[in-house]
Length: 259
Image 1: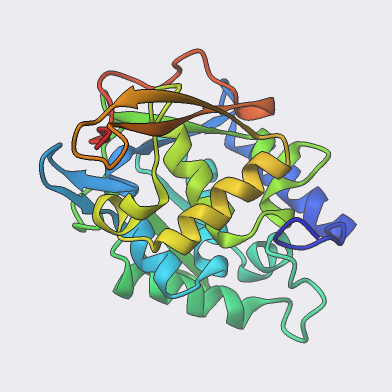
Image 2: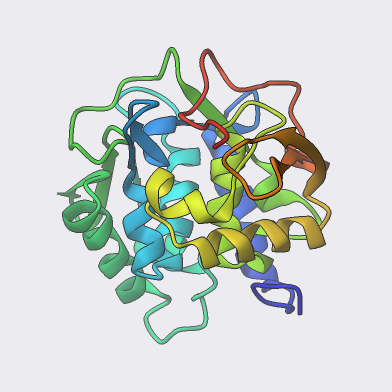
């Protein structure tokens, strides 16, 4: 196993996800996400975004639900009202006694109360979920007009089912990579200070993406007179496969500089 899981997602899970994404009606078949979800602050003083809390808590379920929900919340007022069993099936819990309703309810609660990414309320017998700003500040959501990236629907719809087979560190690194200009430098040891994610998780995530052919790497040697040899090796990464970009990111770039 390269990472994540090796099994194929259940047919009802895949069919439900496709139906939900089709219902969203997004013409560009991609989910826009502000870079604040992965990193905030300034270039000199970067701060982690809500992704850091999700990874630290090993909360795969919340991340999977949030990303799919964001794909669905495609127009003002940026809310979605669906039976919890539909979300449960999309998360692979369709065979649970309650159809995954309890798993979904607990994940919504964390996304609301712990991560500050959504607002929950009732609409009859169903939960009405409204997206908030990706920074976790609980500010109202507005469609981004700068400093954002897009997660292609291929994340769910590709034959490889990336949402199913990638581990949480790999998913985190994929989101980080999508938020950066290509090619990018991401030393694992900078993971804690740049994104609040451990060096081990960054290293494992990058390696897994490379093993899956979703990331390429090349190296260059540059002068650094503070190193014992007077030079250091820098690794430059570039997204590949369905996530390859021709600088599809909007204006600007994240606070990433080589040391």
